Structure formats: C-alpha cells, structure tokens
Image 1 (cartoon, rainbow, N blue to C red):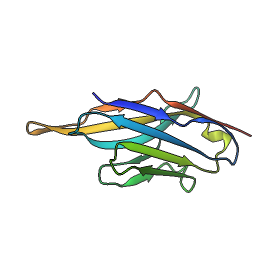
Image 2 (cartoon, rainbow, N blue to C red):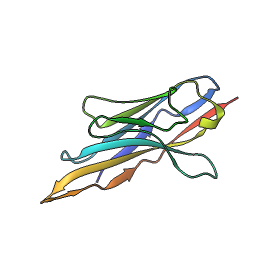
Image 3 (cartoon, rainbow, N blue to C red):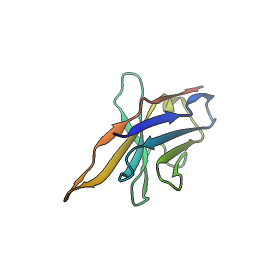
Image 4 (cartoon, helix red, strand yellow):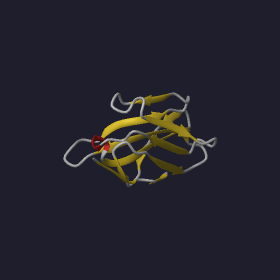
Length: 123
C-alpha cells in the first residue's frame, strides 16, 4: 500500500505563483511514476504534468511554459511550481502515484491517488 499526500495549495491572484507538493510513502521496492491531475467543478479530471521512472517530464499544453515539475533525489516527492496562474487554473489538484514492482516474474503497477489540494486563482 502506498500513501499519497498533497500539500501547498491555496488562493492567489491572477499572475501569482504557488507550489504544490506530493509525497509518496510505500514499500521500498516501488519504482515510482508520479503525476499531477486537476479537476475543476463539473469537469473531468485532466492530466497536468508528470515525471516517469526514466525522469522524463511531460506537460499538458495548457500549462507548458508556466508550470514546472521536479522531484527530490529520493524520487518519492513530486513538486509542481505554478507560475503566471490564471482563473482557468482553479481546480483541485491530485497526485497520482504508480508503484511498479516485480512480483515473481511479473511486473505489477498499482495506482494510488491522494486526497487533493485546492488551488484557487482570482481575477
């Protein structure tokens, strides 16, 4: 079982910045892929950014150039630095963690979600 905890959300005016964090705690044999999703009221949960086990970072087109994902050296903490925020970025931000591990001769990759952290941007 992997515990996923997000933090760092809040309220900011348009043009401002916030950083949200995600910490994953689980078995030592986990190889983590970690990513951020967001969900605005009445809308689907959408991919924002993520870093895979190879260290490759991806971004949604809507946040490219404004948001930056990074990890700590232990690779169990994911940060999302959000700059030049606009009201369209208002949403609950969720961290998704995939723990890949070898079970016998088979790789398993269960996914876990955090409870989310709210980001509100006012105009």
